Image (tube, rainbow, N blue to C red; front, side):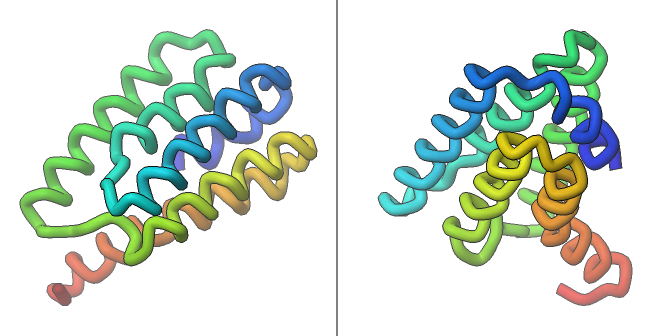
Length: 130
């Protein structure tokens, strides 16, 4: 919810250089996925870079706290990342593509899609399905 709301603000503040940096992280994710390496730290870096332009020190602290909790819960529950790394890469690329086009609604939809997998796992847990 936090990121879906913030993406609207960040869409107006990102420079071309920042968008290039985000695309570079997505390219690193893609390479890691092809090599069969997990890339949670790249995912985290993507989100940190995404919101850095807001200049609000509280945002990265909150995102970092959520990230830490999610990784701990995922480890305990045995959750893995998306079933295919290319899904994660595509979701991040969709976010950057929408932001580069200055498509605020598209960026918000892409961010919602990105988190849909996490929401599905949480829903399964709450229903007792593993």
